[in-house]
Image (cartoon, rainbow, N blue to C red; front, top):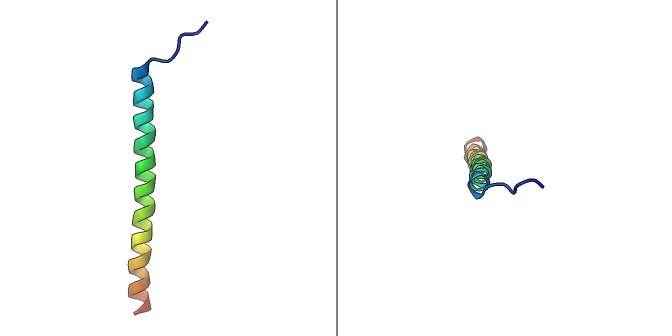
Amino acid sequence: MTTPPRPVDDLAARRKRAARTALIAGGIAVLIYIAFIASGVLGA
């Protein structure tokens, strides 16, 4: 039988996925912010 993955490796992988998710969410938030500012500037 194969040995189960070590918890340390699992924790590192979870942190990596969480960091990637946070960066993606942050990027989307920045794009929405820029779009909001741009719509105000261009609409003026």
